[in-house]
Amino acid sequence: MVDLQTLSLLLSINETQMVQDLVSTVMSSPQVSQFMNEHPLFFKNIQDHVQQWGQTLPAQMKNIPVPDDLQQEYILYLETLGLSAEQFTQHSVRLLFQLQQSDFHTDAQNLLLSLAHANPANRKQLFVQKWREHLSSRVLSLEIAFAEQERERMLQELALRMQVAGELDETLAPQHPGKLWDLTATHLLQGNSTLFRHYASFLASNPELKKIADDLGRAATQDSHAEEYIEQVEVQEWQDVPQDSVPDDLVGIHQSNEINRLLSSETVLLTEPELETIFYKQLAERRLLNYQFMGQNRSPETVLSERRTFGETQDTKGPFIVCIDTSGSMSGYPEDCAKGFCFALLQIALSENRACVIMLFSTDVVTYELTGPEGLQEALNFLGCSFKGGTDLEPCMHQVMNYMQQERFSNADAVVLSDFIAQRLSIDTEQQALQIKRNGNRFNAVSLSRHGKPSLMKIFDHVWRFDTSLSGRMLRKVR
Image 1 (cartoon, rainbow, N blue to C red):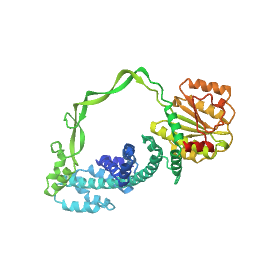
Image 2: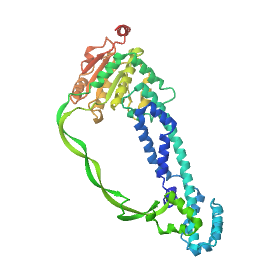
Image 3: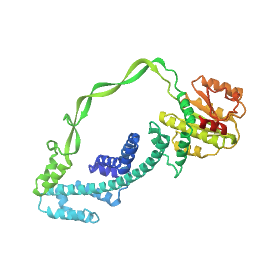
């Protein structure tokens, strides 16, 4: 069975230009151009996404099904190539009969009639040349149809992702939206983006809550210290670069329009006046068979080199692990405050490329990873859930500490949002938390009630207070 890749290769069809044109068409489409004008920070992400899609197209084209009649016609073409000029003349009638079901039949019949008195070798050469053009045209038609289908699919995918990214760029407003574009691979359900707008508006009306989130985001910055470290620097080096303009070695045959490297078989087209137009047409289209040479030339190249440096360094900011009390006392305004605070931390996490995990604790612990592959859907699930149940901080703290012992959660900031009206932690849990803090992790608390137990909050490095009672809300408005 002949596949499309084999046909393309043997017929000297180059899909590279087609793919490049397809990528350019997608990037210059009106909807993509308009979005990038409105959101220029997404340009690199969209460009990389479309380029990666373009790189996968040649591999996908290999799997395009080839019609049976095209396979049979190609096999007949190969058999004809193996005939001598005299055998071709003897079998021309049988060949026309075998081509009756082909679109090439009429052209083949007319061509044989017009060349009846031509040189037998030239007659066969021109016939197989025109036949190859016909086969190439059919293969290209299959590839073009597939390319158009892929173009429409990519434009639809980009339209959906750009819609989501545009809405979230306005609400989450990250400084570097690259991570946000990655998250748009998860498609939002219709209407769910209103949750993001709601909590963006809530956060804007509660700037004190936003300030606490900003203070927590800066908590991971450690005092810098001097140390010796290795950095990568760019240097110029002379490299031997392969170039086909340097005729050192003959490496093969390719299609081009260089007369001085022309195969002698291509000059057959110039032996008959009526065939000259075909020669010049292929010359203009760079489709004449040329010898391909390859040599080497020296040119300066930029390479990376290691250099030892002694100076100041800073620890990398780690992930956020947010533990939220979902007891009945947290419903209503405290619930909105907890979700608004998490929304602010998500903004920081996206801007600083930090992970953000939410844990809801009551009688059980439910986890949402807001910056994971399904982060947007996880965020929607979290923002859409309701708070109800009891308060049991102990199992949540155990799960937090299990996270902090993983390498990817080193230097993490854990923050507990609660009214802290609950039983104190066990001595074993407090001691384990102290040990984990010595490894560079931090435990923080945001108390949403002025009635929280001080003994419950003594293990935290920082405690912020945000009174969610009616009197606390009134005092903030008066300030």
